[in-house]
Length: 89
Image (cartoon, rainbow, N blue to C red; front, side, top):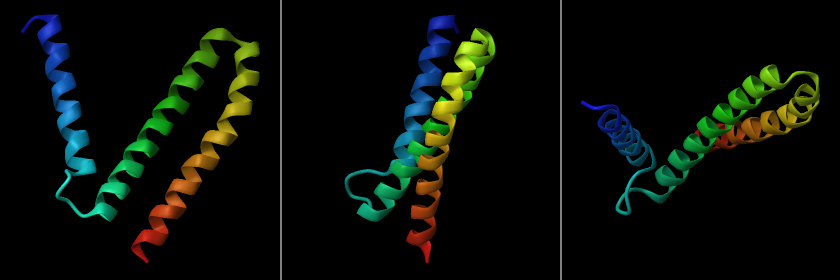
């Protein structure tokens, strides 16, 4: 496969996995919401990783920004985990 075909195939697989996790219109609404929140948690983790990488590249000025954003992202992640925990009780 060419590089473009390889990238397209990776995008197709990622979207397929996302749809399986989130569910379709005929799936249980609670399961769909839970899948969506799970995806949101994964995206928040990805954002945290990217912010950390950027701060390492940019130096002290960016570290200050990461220090401000990291607790907020951690709070969102904790809220999602708490919500998921309540869902299963």
